Length: 277
Length: 168
Image 1 (tube, rainbow over the protein chains, first blue to last red):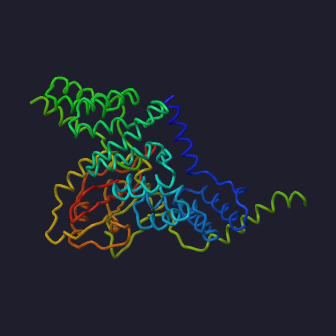
Image 2: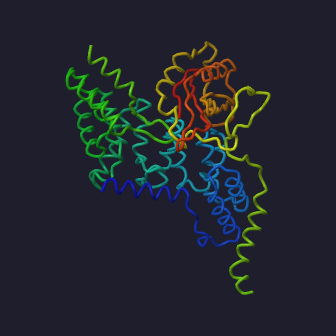
């Protein structure tokens, strides 16, 4: 069920990301014409000249077409031109903050690790949307978990705990575990390790194992907990399990950016070398 | 004739409308492409296929698999100087990894914390560019058994002249 939900979520996002607009929804001729231009633009490869030219034409015909500005911005973000990305996306945010401010906040978190900026956008979005529970554009996280990660990375652990509770516990008790993000428990466990709440960290890692089986990061961070507790044999077993999973299992990875708390083979080698001393 | 009016004409009008509208702004063949510039680029650095340079996210990239080592090298070799204290913002170095695993066509993009164009201290930007140029061991993009040239960028988030994060 969990995976089905996420799969559907990802499919929807994928469809929304490239989908055509319904031009019948527009009533004035300029908007209809811009809509057709937009729909024609998205048939071309993202970031290609024709894709950008037709999107540019769409927003010239109808400067209030927020979808056009947003679509224009995307390839600049992915390809490291953040001035142009903001130039276009900010116009979309001005026009339709309820559809784009969350995207801007999430991208500032994801692509630039601009935690303060992401929080500014996401807090404003949270208020504007009436505290609606939304997810990131790729479906990976609840926006509250993104806010929690921003606060955690800024060292604001009380605020991070608050947002983790909103993104995890409130969902757990209202919708069930199937609606919790794939890596939410893991990220909270890492924060609990920093706070030396080892019991809480292990509890979250146990929950994580139920959601994402066979991920490298789970035994790695369990090993860190055991090592901190002086349980060196248990720690070594967990690190060895993490090494096995690198060959046979999965690890935190994203097509665009390094994910927070991702573990590399060298982390495991280093942990094992310490446990053998 | 009716068939022409109901089926062909709307498409023809749309096509003419699209053709007419699509000429207003000049865009490059691909957003973010880096054409050769004889004033900036090493003429000995060549790429296999100018028309098909992948993006780093099109395939498994060397950067993503080796980011930890790359970051360790960059942080280990970067030296903040005394007069870097007012240097804040994001500095992105974009380049091409060619099909032989060599790097070239480096370009620097600098913005402040508000995402506005800015200029970092030349000693700072020069040092980061030098370090990125020194990185070795790049592997070209591979797709369906074929090797390709690819774009890569590295963004440094600077605060008071210190590197506080390296992305993507």
